[in-house]
Length: 351
Image 1: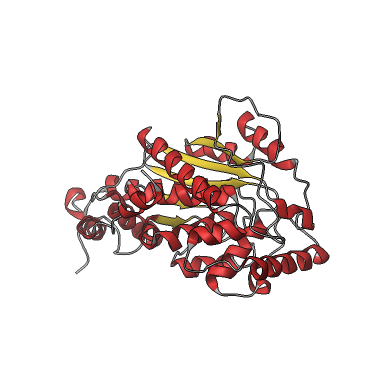
Image 2 (image 1 turned 45 degrees about the vertical axis):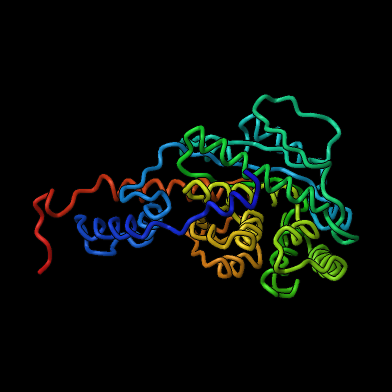
């Protein structure tokens, strides 16, 4: 299916399933509402999966990697060669995301969306969807062609559908790409209508001079490229990244199949802004794992109407927040499904 066909398959959440889940929550052996966000989350998952008793067994976190020409502007504290080095770390099982996915019993799906390396990594675990050798410098012109933007989104859709066909009940999003907080900030400033100063943060830990450069680069990129705020693909074309487009596609693809997506931090949320601009209904299928320390992330979540599950001061990316959020989603389902009702347990209710 192409992008438009996939978007057209996204439906509103199933209200009957949500009502049934809510009614069961009110029958469980606890004061009504006493499990707070776990109750809300279970009801949302019921609506997404379109069944009163949602389940999460198979979990997959899709980590998409891509490089960015904008690193030439000095916007990152790390060199670009860190991108392929960290991807190899993912493939070898040594990164934080590997530890956390082992902890929650999920699989990591690593995708090369556009690493700027002429060499090919040979691991059979790597999915190769390379759109190009990194994006162009958004401070000097469009980051990519419209065809490349569409290709990145389509690749994300196809990868999501493949994981769902392999049994995934929930998908998490993760990223790797030196410099990718800059295009993410540009996307947020564009869609939210905020100034670069409102959104741009320190990313990998740039100093004050680096922060000033990032703000100036985002301002220049928006001025030079003039992305069309009504057109998510144009925004991605002008100021985005290949992995950002891929993650947007994952969200759209999952929503089309009634599968929830646990979003990670700043970069994943920039992808969510693109996805929601293209397919407003997909917002209902998104769950924000956490609020990042990156400046502007909270404003992005507010625009999407998402309330983060965790406040852990995370800012690593990789899907680390997604992994922790998925553990909360699984717990929410188990509470709804496995906890006894007052009638089943023979427990008196309050008068």
